[in-house]
Image (cartoon, rainbow, N blue to C red; front, side, top):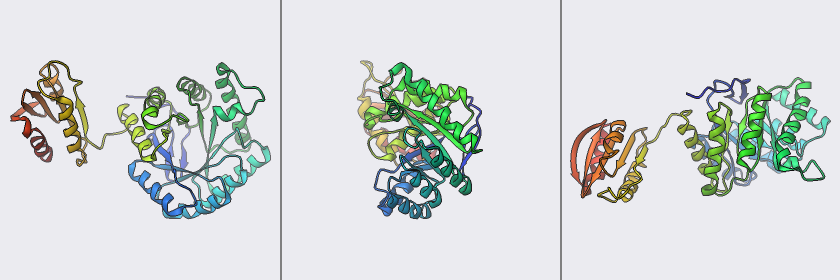
Length: 352
């Protein structure tokens, strides 16, 4: 059981973030904000996929105007992603953003920040202070050595946070991201030790899904296992639904989310296998797509680990040459020819 870090609890719309509240999955729309219909459709798709917060970029006045309309058409709290323009931040707050994301690397004017704080207080809008390594490096005329970058990120976070606390505003969520796995882990450990605000986790510029999945899983998994992290986003250059699916799998693997769909366990196969286990597993995986239950199904290729895995599975097949032994809750219930394995598993799933 993971012991979550104790933090302030912040409300983003109706969603609570921090301490004992569940870790919240969020993602970001990837269609033009001014295309209201497409944006609303993607927000709703993300909500159905498991996102409890959705972030939308608002770089122009037209985008904040569209944001105001999108807010009215969806049921999930929206975050306005703001860079460079304090005016956009205030417009987004007035448009109904549940939270705005500000970047200390490009919104730095003290008076402008105070105006944003006043607007956020009036509208009960939370603020995420999001420090990115790439943006922080732009604050210096000379590039910052790699070994000093996390220290600089923490310094900028402290300085920015002081502006909010001195203005009596504490409805804050913090984040510090890098494209580098180890630096992202390091800076978030530092933030967790220094502040008691909820932390948003993510790895920037992680790449295409096949390249992003492992670095994101290592980064987020390491921190979450240490109790650090209250809301997460997996970044991948593809559909945001894929981001959400990866995030959900990370949380399920750590026991922070309950599984709602089937879990398929498959042995890696070896020379002992008397059947094409991988081919069989692919057929089972395809059959399970229509099942909306958190059942555990095991596909094993021989008797070494087969019976043991079958004991832990709701349903299992231990394959032999041209046949399969079907187990339910650890008890062998039938022996069927290879051609009958899939139909038998589906029949038994219905009984469950």
